[in-house]
Image 1 (cartoon, rainbow, N blue to C red):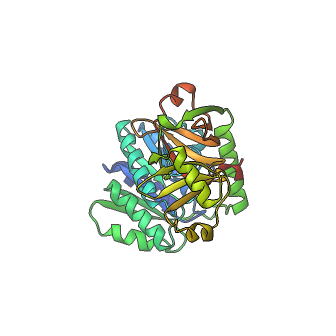
Image 2 (image 1 turned 135 degrees about the vertical axis):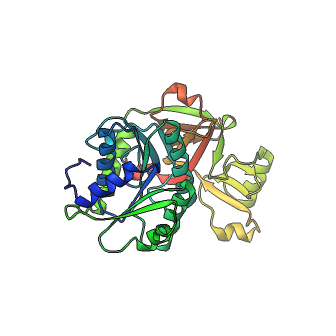
Image 3 (image 1 turned 90 degrees about the vertical axis):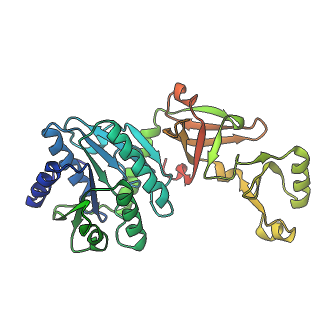
Length: 347
């Protein structure tokens, strides 16, 4: 994202109002291909020119510039940059998908967490680059949640017509917010789905290019977003019982308050389970784990980095993970946040 777009008069007017204000947050809203990221980079550079320290939260999990896709990234700008992808993230939050749909809580929580971290870095302004999800009810709920969770601030709406009015009109009547409308530039280039996918591939490839593999024992970690490793391990005698009952090899199992997760070699049909009155079973196959993207989290609930599950060894009770984080950081991993995102589709 090289900054080469025309600077509209409306940009200059909004810039002056933002940097003359005491309000810390600047939400930039706009649909897909509206020029949000270009405006964010330009505005941040304008602040740096004035001697200000600018925090940028890249909350576009599908087309992220600060940090890899599936994450919300925080960067701190103290000098001008040609493009946001040149900024090293100082903190990341793992959402686990390239779309915010189905992950609204993580999107809201993650944005607020990084906003607080930006303030800890003594920034003058925090500019939040958001996703292009604005049209439907989900987009409205997501934007409301983010903005209200952070509180008073500026809202910059980049519109071609009036596609964000259903969001910004609410904040326009509230005294804690300053709403600014600017038009989308005629120079904005529409990016195809194929090009977006290629850009994501390159971002993932860049992130994982210097990765190594390590093993984590089940007993050393807890898991998030999965019933696996959330309960009491079943003894071999119980596994043998379920193998006979299901006529299937059961590699591992647990008793949890969410049900009975069993790791099986092949998927069992629902008819076979229900015919044995086992509707409490949660079947997980080895394929469910293979190449799944995970977040590696430390004792302070901070994301150390992303990983890819390469293999699960249920005899040794350990998992093999590929990650670019250094070995010293591996020792700090206390929990693993699972996603449903299989990275082999992109690498």
